[in-house]
Length: 442
Image 1 (cartoon, one colour):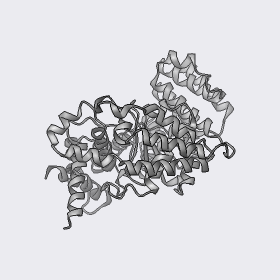
Image 2 (cartoon, one colour):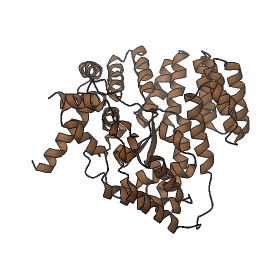
Image 3 (tube, rainbow, N blue to C red):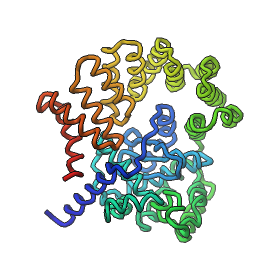
Image 4 (tube, rainbow, N blue to C red):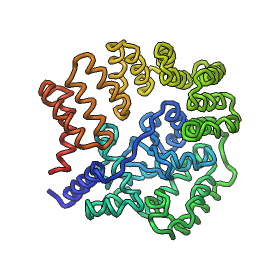
């Protein structure tokens, strides 16, 4: 075995150990079909400019209010919701996406052993999120480092980019912005947020500053690159709408309802205003006003599956399962390939007692996207009700693996191995979970 191979295996073990260690605070994904669709639309022109297939790169939101963004493979760009809320314009958020896309296209992921596509599996995403939490840890890093020694430093190096990589990504990212018709000055505005943080102790820096080396030279270079494009911008597209929509829904669920209701119309888009009001009324446990508001949004955009999905959520969480099935059914008809909507429809069917049909949709959802703990929980419940205890154990094991809960994942994976036919797809998936755990323990 070569020294390079040995180093990669050692670092991968460190990643998994840190991701699954009980002392490490993990991160979780914030899955919402509307937000992910909006971010995908926002990212599309930038990804195309980077010669990346927009359909092959997911923009995923980390449920954390700190400011950070990162990539670990060619298929996923992770944005903390705190970063999205910090961006003032669509161009600024596109600038962050362009920069992360540049890390992909410039080959900066080659040295990363986790760049194997496993961030699309439950165990893989659990490892990534656990490692990412440790990589950007501030004061909590000491406790994690005490338990895992030099592995913590290895994880920090794994996620951190070198200065040369940052300069290269800046140059490419500004070019992608201009090609996409966005304002290259947005890259300067993003760096403005973090100016001076390199002088602060790690514990007081934003995670973005800890994993993306800053400095005066970098700021000056980006400013010079952006100025070189002058006013030669293409015609703007609908990026502002999708930026406002993603940010508005995030803020509606994260901010107090009173705050949202007082600012519902600030985006200037009437449908977004009604959507924000619907969320606020729902959080105030006022389903009638919530339904009235979302119906107004639907009236403006009757072919929009994501407003119908929100209506289904409001009805579902209000205990009106039959009506929720109808709303989710309409949303599924308009977006038949959206895994999160398929999963929500399956959950509503399960709540209404249509277990066999629910299982069909939950399985479709999980096959398309195996990164939703909620879908996995409902899938386990549906399998159990149908008497498929082996598959129920597998879904539970993968859910715990996704959440970084090693002991629970191991218990249910072993049960799945005992109950499922040896060599079957489910049996092999259970073995994959156990393999990831054994990699750490042995």
